[in-house]
Length: 166
Image (cartoon, rainbow, N blue to C red; front, side, top):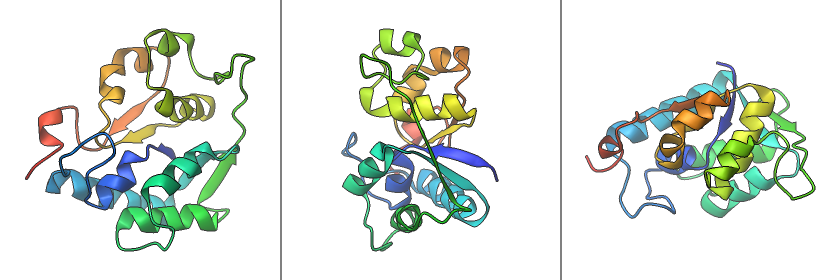
């Protein structure tokens, strides 16, 4: 297990709830993949966060700091504990216009979701993958992300029909 940038949808899916972008619950197989990934990450990996704290703020909006009841909440509790061997905070410099220095202009030009830009910039800066479960923006921009050297691991695959339901 290595270092990863984890999109907020992964712990949300691990909790088995519908995310902010979806009214439907994740499929059981998708949830299992998210749970397995987070358990392995918490056991032997490193979670990358931006030093400014924007990723952590996004986690806070969707996850419980008590670490319960779901695996996604436990993941968030570990982020809050900031164990030095599990969490690494990285400075993400910004341009004068507020965009991240490490975010490729091609993604901005293609209207890549502003809420996902911090994840993409961090992954590119640190040369690590972004882990996604059910956020279609990572699929919609897959070619541009790949062309720019941003690796995305889609835990639930690239067929959106398999992301939800049973």
